[in-house]
Image 1 (tube, rainbow, N blue to C red):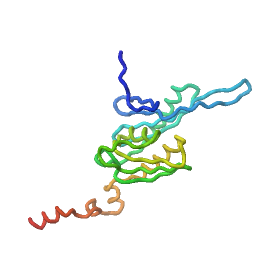
Image 2 (image 1 turned 180 degrees about the vertical axis):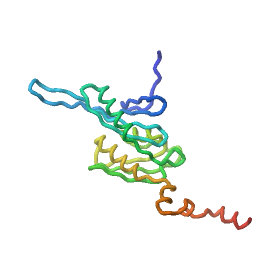
Image 3 (image 1 turned 30 degrees about the vertical axis):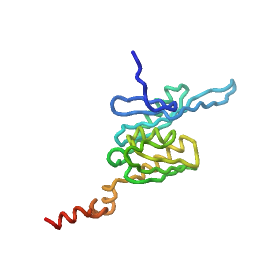
Image 4 (image 1 turned 60 degrees about the vertical axis):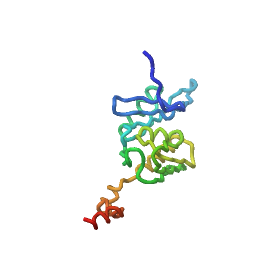
Length: 189
């Protein structure tokens, strides 16, 4: 049976979970515990899971074996998913800023055809989320855990125009005003 090449370079593993979710392995870290007889090794995995339609989650898992750590991380990611409103199904509605610890993340909406301009762990989040046009910058830390937590902090702040209008007690068109073309058409009728 021939294997199909998978996207998502830079060593990240990608798996399809049924037809629903895509999970991306962000990092695996080997940790050692020193005991009387020597060292005991364990593995810590960080996984991002998404449906590529606006839902995404992340999880971390530790175990003695790599597959078990990945399984635990994937389960945690599925339990802690968030929904992110997307504009035209390809980008964000507005720019967002997030931080966690020393990590700071700036996420900007982009024009069609821009692609995902983001590094490492943030790229995995956007690919799992289903965003195809975004520009992101991370400063302050290169720790994948903190970068992902800062990215999720930023994504939780993104709101659609409908949500903003509901929060202010207005209609969506009241936020943007009427377009010039629609006013002249209304005057001519």
